Length: 256
Image (cartoon, rainbow, N blue to C red; front, side, top):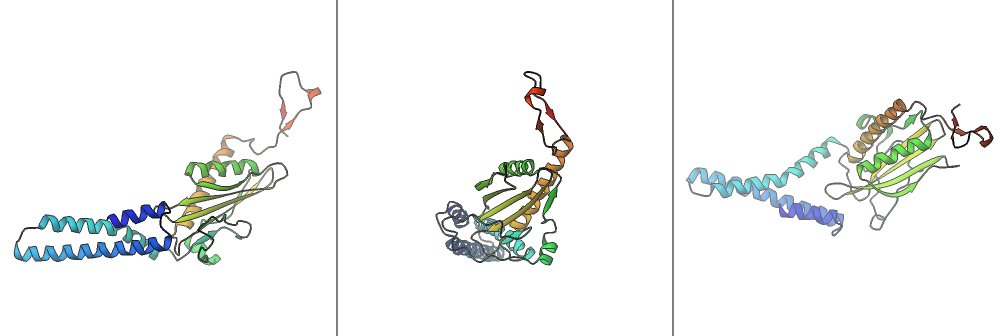
């Protein structure tokens, strides 16, 4: 159990490389399997001889099985999801990753074809909203902040800019680093949202990238729907009335 916990902590803190983490994690798994095997042999022998030592054998079995639980969980995910490291709703060209020291030598991405993506992650699709580019990007930014993702690059849409984009990094529980790219394009009255999620230093994402996109875009659907429901005029541009037509100290706007 110390081998499992310490290897994960060191990997999350970047005190060991991902390659060394894999070796350490495999070594911890072998030790846990050995502990379970020895505990089972001890219990079988105690059953036959009636000697003392049941408590120690059972504790050894308990700790060994507890250490194997995360390996069993990730093994089930490996069987459930294909070996993929890069998922996107559209062309990855406009959604580049922000590389950092240590990821320049990241392994080649493993991707799904369009038919495979539709089967494995049917909700990984581009979103089109009847909401302006700027408010849509604001909703995206709020959702990213709520999730605590570390924003590495931010390009806000503004005057003359017809695109907003952000790159954020996520650290999974075992310490694998994954990057999310959200790109919003559109006009004052509509928006198109694309998303990409990729593993930076892993050979298998265990389905995390696809599930992340589906969950985020589902939350975005709900947030945009709520915004439009509660603010019927949210998508109407505002125009300020000229000063000679406005009473003093009374700001007036016209909604076409």
